Length: 125
Image (cartoon, rainbow, N blue to C red; front, top):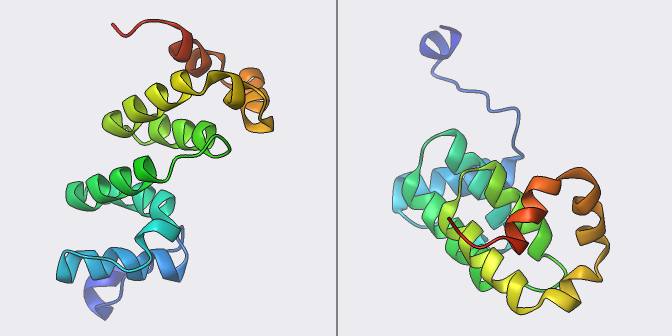
C-alpha cells in the first residue's frame, strides 16, 4: 500500500477541520470545536469505528437540538447508526411536533424518507 511506503494517509472525504478533530480525539481523548462540527465528527467516527468520538458527537448533537435542526439530525442519526441520538431526536420531535412539522426540513424529509417519518408517528418496537 502506498500509505505504508510513504507514511502518509490521505483522507479525502472529510475536510481538514474534521480530520484534525478526529486526530485530536485519537491522541488526547478530546476534540476542539465539538459542538460546531459534531455532525461531521459523527460521520468520521462511524467510518473509522471510533466509538468514544461517536458517543461524544451524539451527546453534543442531542444537547444542541432545535426545532430547526432536529429533522436533519434525525436523518444523520439514521444514516450513521446512532441509536441513542436517534431515540433522543425522536423524543424531541414528538414533544415539539407542531413546530417541527412547520419547518422546511420536515417537509423535505416527508417527500424523501417516508419510512423515517413513520418512525416519528409509530410507537417504538
